[in-house]
Amino acid sequence: MPEEKIYDCIIIGAGPGGLQAAIYLGRYNRDVILLDRGGGRTRHARHIENFLTQKAISGKEIIEIGIEQAKNFNVKIENATVTKVLKNEFFEVYAGEKKYLSKFVIVSSGVYDNLPDIENLHKFLGISLFTCIDCDGYKTTNKKLIIIGNSLKTVHLAFAMKEMFTKDITLVLYMDKVPDEYKEELREENIPLIIGRPVRIIGDEKMDALELKDGQRIECEVVMSHFGYKLNDAFLSKLDLKRDNNGFKFIVAHNYESSLSGLYIVGPLNQGNDQVVIAAGEGAVAAIDIKKRLLNP
Image (cartoon, rainbow, N blue to C red; front, side, top):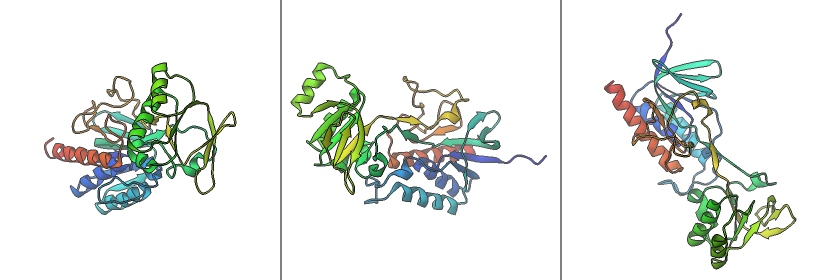
């Protein structure tokens, strides 16, 4: 039997963190393979305006340019959906029946937004319907905004957005879980609270209104959807990795190494902020740390 190839590092996911790590490790002339299933939250971002030197760039452009950069430094990139990661003498990364071996692993697999079932949502997603205050809150400045969600955190979001972006806010919650003191504060801040279930966004070229299940229509120019997200982490289920107190995000060290030696987690799966520029920095830090460890095993 031929001897199995052992990579210096396997990177899972062509997100900003994974690609930045790939570029660094490729420039160190390390043997690296990046496995990516395609798609991803960053790729679907229409306009990224808070990345240094980029007045505006789409997430798709960032990913495609990053892939070409990584390839230029001899990083091997394969379209593959990772299904399982094990750790024995080396890391074993499985994509279906195919197995890859490596000394180190960087996970950059990202998250999925929990999007409500609303007609025409995807038509406006990333244009006038947003899911992230840090990414797109600025785009609601001085516009007629509806915030939709189902938790007290959504109420806090409404207060924050009024302070920073727009005074014209309507809060739509799916269920009435709001304590009286919060309702009083909403009244003081002149933020109408409506309990209902949105079913359709009305508008052709631009958003005009949000229609609720009871037929009520609320005029708006932009919508902020606040239903959280789920991690793309099922392939890590065989590893005993430490998570936060909620059992949700992974705990990592200052170098983004997880509780399992040699496995690094960058991007929104760890406890840091979910931003393209931050994930890229995390990927660089992880790659530099792996470089040092390969030199001094």
